[in-house]
Length: 274
Image (cartoon, rainbow, N blue to C red):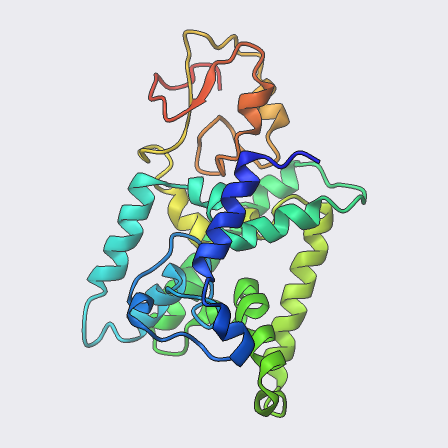
């Protein structure tokens, strides 16, 4: 079976994010100097293998302490990632995106994109506002990490509980709830492509704001484009045009374009047909 360049990139990113192999053996969290830096994709701080921090978790932590200091570093980091990479991060550099891609390969009936999935795409912006911004600002908790994040459960919660017998006796409702959320999301991902990315992920929602200006991205050469819309039809997510805020830069449209009008990193005029 041929493995695509995108899949290789996803695997390499996941390994680089979580290369503290010793942590998986000891069940301890790395707390060295690199934890002061953030990786571009969603990757739990508490994963035993994680060598850097999650930008989403760092943002919530910064907002919790915003009474004492403004979160210049994390906002600057998100701005930098967004301007340079945008939602290319979602398609190529997110370990939980890789998990979803692999689960979707399970041969079960698939839910095609439709009006309902398009409407659900706006849910991630509500989650961003409520769980990532409002809840931490009113000093309640890092809302998304605590109550929703499936990446935190699969990368951090499960490995830590598995490796530390002392933690097993502390399992309560919250951990059970997070396991339920993870299981539900992964189950739906079997039928619906990238369920978490499309409908829930607030990090993807943030990066989507940079879609029009990101340096790395998919562009359409309107001099070649015939307006056949093969790119829209083949896209597994709810885009209105190539490279818009819902586009995760997976590159499926590049292979499907009959006139080779779609490219990475080629800034051309905006698509006049879509």
